[in-house]
Length: 284
Picture 1 (cartoon, rainbow, N blue to C red):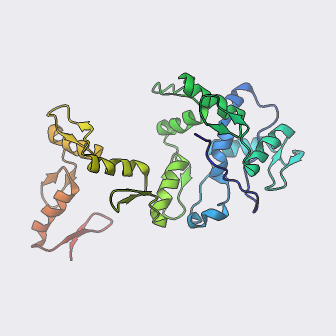
Picture 2 (cartoon, helix red, strand yellow):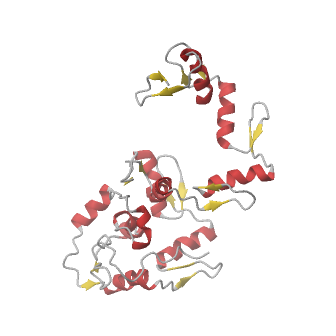
Picture 3 (cartoon, rainbow, N blue to C red):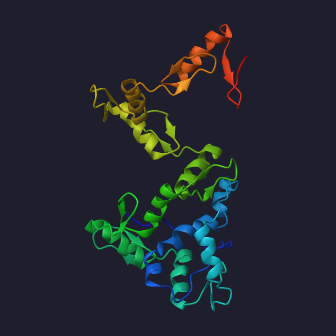
């Protein structure tokens, strides 16, 4: 498996966050994947992604702090393609591989190759089963520091990536990219057996279970099986007695919202029921 393709083509400049100072500590180096991970969060939208031009993302607070404290305005090594600056020529050479798509570091166990040596080191840890980075809150372990940082946002509640179209905020860039497709209408994952298409691969995988008849999700209480995790979650509410959807006109409650909508027809003399944004019902 190859490292994700070159996303920094030679051509119109794409502004990158500045590099760290040359005397970074060993601890900072261990967390060094942050620079590559966060580059995309403050880069201008590439020309080939104009359909997503309505999006923008906010740089995480810690990255803004790093930019402020590690000023590279006087860094002597400058990329002529995009203006990236570095204190060391070796860092500039590494950066230039983004433009040339050069991937000199190759795994001797599979087809993986990458621009950066540290990415290969992290990849090899996957082959060896090593997970040196651990969350002090819950014990989660991972092979690289960037994955741990993304995980920690679940504990801190930080959501640095925001959609400029609707204000949706998320803790990781991949979720924002998936969300963006809702605005563009893009559904790249298509079923080969019918005309179904999906926004996410996980949705297509779930759909394919309908064709195969597989039902991997089972209730431990009664043996009920389903192909859909959300269906199992709804089923489990029958055992727990949970009925989260409540009528604001009487004491009726339901497991599913669709059942509540059907109930509301009784209050509207058979007319269809809607909700205002403030959840107050009205008839139409």
